[in-house]
Structure formats: C-alpha cells, structure tokens
Image (cartoon, rainbow, N blue to C red):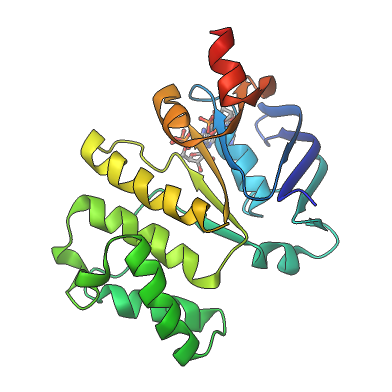
Length: 226
Ligand code: ADP
Ligand code: ADP
C-alpha cells in the first residue's frame, strides 16, 4: 500500500486561480520523496489538501490506503505535519513541549516520556530537553518542530519548505534529523524549491509547475537527464 496516493487532484481557489490541474502521484512506504517546484507551482496547495487544511475541487487522496473522504480522522492519524513557522511555547522546555503534544493526541504520559527521549535524541536535542526553549539556537528550534511532530509516530511525515529562509548550517542539521527519521522507517515527503535539498535527501521526486507534474522519477534518473 502506498504511503500516499493522489489521483487526478484539482484545486481551483475561490478567486479562480487553478492551483492544481490534475495531479497524480504515488509515494512508496519508506520513501524519501521531494516535491520540487518554483514559487506558485502548487506545492503548498497539494500539501494542504493531503493534510486536510485545504479543500480539494476534484480527485482522490489516500494516506496509507485510507481515503481522506471515507475516514478523514483515520487518515490524519497516519500523518505528521511540520509547519513552516515555529509555533511552540518558547517558555516551555522541549521535553514538556513533546509530552504535552502527545497528551493532546491522547497518548498516555508514560508512553509519551519514553517517546520524547527517542525523538529528542534523533533531533540531537536530548541534552537540551530541560532548558527553556527560547534559549535554543535557530537550528535547535527547527529540529524541535520535527521532533514534536514525531511524537504521534506518524507513518508519513510531511514538511512544506522546511528550510525556507534558514542558513546552510541550520539546513544541514535538519537534513541529518530527517535522514535519521527516514532510516528508522518513516516515509517523508517534503516540498522545496532547492534542487540541492532534494538531491541531498530524496530518493524519488516529482517536479511540479503551474499545477501540473512535469517530471517524476528517481533522483538518479532525474539528475542523469539534467
Ligand atoms: P507553492 O507552494 O508551490 O508556492 P501554492 O500552492 O502556494 O504554490 O500556490 C499555487 C497557486 O495558487 C499560486 O498561484 C497562488 O497564488 C495560488 N494560491 C495559493 N493559495 C491561495 C489562496 N488561499 N487563495 C487563492 N489563491 C491561492
Ligand atoms: P508558500 O510560500 O508556501 O508558497 P505563500 O507565502 O505564497 O506560500 O502564501 C502564504 C499563505 O497565503 C498561504 O496560506 C497561501 O494559501 C496564501 N496565498 C498564497 N497566494 C495567495 C493568493 N494569490 N491569494 C490568496 N491567498 C494566497
């Protein structure tokens, strides 16, 4: 069963903009997949629909085989989303941010504490688990966003332009965390407009432009064509 299957996806916004004009793609379980494209291509719209933040005009979306129209909440339980903006409470400690987030999803506290150690270690933040989050560096804050999303143990982790506007040092730290999470079995999809980022991380990619997939395949085959 694909981690994500999108068929014939269309989105026309209220103002008439056709952001997606019939997008189909499949992401295999365990894959690290990039959706690459310039600003305005439709990347955020696609991610928004998959994560149920944006309504689609037409098409189907299945997350781990679950159709979002058939059982939206079950589909969303398979999925973790890392928002672009850092939105945790700066006056809480990383450990509490992770444990409280899990609590919101009904995960028992003892389970959450064990998981928090694992996700914070993956993000190289375990030593910082008990400091005030506002004292973390920019890169640590970004990695904490990823760690928190992993508290629900999603089978599919989605990031929309995760490194937009951050410097190369911070990007490399985030890449390391994402590689670790993927190596442990979580499927990852990210959108980016940096070919370099897709190249550093991803096995497969689709290139999207003006609401259409213009190329899809393995990173290797794609680079061979450039
Ligand atoms: P990307 O993430 O690749 O930059 P977006 O999905 O954000 O692309 O945008 C695709 C197109 O849809 C663009 O033309 C954008 O201006 C338009 N768009 C995005 N969000 C909205 C919205 N809420 N209302 C109207 N048009 C939108
Ligand atoms: P991104 O950087 O992800 O491509 P933007 O920064 O362009 O997105 O847009 C930020 C927000 O504004 C998004 O929620 C998007 O849906 C919305 N938006 C983008 N373009 C338009 C548009 N043309 N009309 C209305 N809303 C838009």
